[in-house]
Length: 101
Image (tube, rainbow, N blue to C red):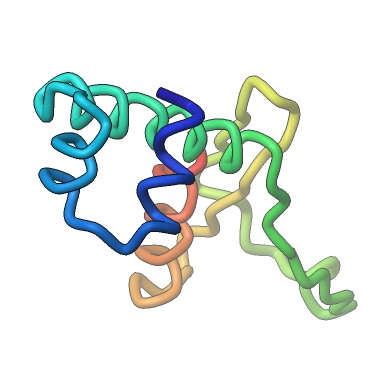
């Protein structure tokens, strides 16, 4: 099936027409198409990097505000969430973490 998927995409035929032309069962073709695309997506996600911009701010170092929560991931990164952090900033960060874990 790994050979058929790129050929099907290049053919610009519908999935049903391609299967008929190559004597493939459409439900089996569809199963492997989904299985292989899930496998590729997880491989691409696992091997991709997410850019992070680091900003040095001396005023943060001297701040008396202590982190309310410290989250440490199994891959070694940690995230400190201060008690005064804006929820509009926190929500996208948590969504990003959920998407990569």
